[in-house]
Length: 281
Image (tube, rainbow, N blue to C red):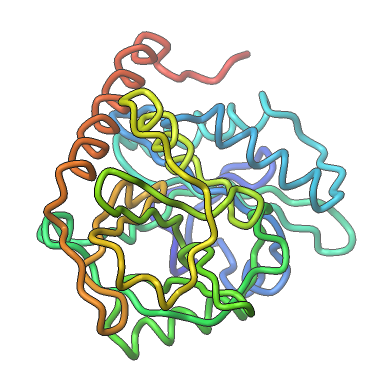
């Protein structure tokens, strides 16, 4: 699998060499997936990711054979057999019509450069919308289309706009907009419930800057000072431009949110380091 790294992956309960992972098979029959991040050998916010994974199964009416403990143990086992300290982990559910398969593998980190975390990234408007935005489902045609468009425009992310002209989310992220001391984001029912997105909402509440969940028409983007996107592997990332519209990455409120998020991650690692994340017997 071109996106997979490390020495081994796990399919169901069996360890196999990464060279045996069939990329074509995954792209044609995979249906549900989840991505989380490992830092210092610890899977960050693993409880939240498992809750979202199982909520996706519920939304898609999939009767999944494993439970949350089984999936967590598979993640921990993957970390141990690959001796990984820092990497994204991808969970992939496949039903080939005869049997369920569940794949746990390490994946390449598609991250911006250190400079882009300071100056922001280039994004573009894409008039597309997901059929079931609350579920994290595999859509190979959508993935292929967006990757090609991003490559053509040398852009990092595409900002999705629905049929009514309203911004929803990024193709691989959630989006926040800042005007003065007010922060906006799309209502939860219309986007993928990002784990980092929820952490940002919690942070904003705690610092006294609650986020307003509101639909924003894409032509109103020019009225905002700063934008940032959030995601598991990208964390909190400023946006430099959307098409020809330019925004500032030097925003004190955005920087404070980013600093608070880093503290949250450090605190999570600190409070879970003693568990060593060894699989339970």
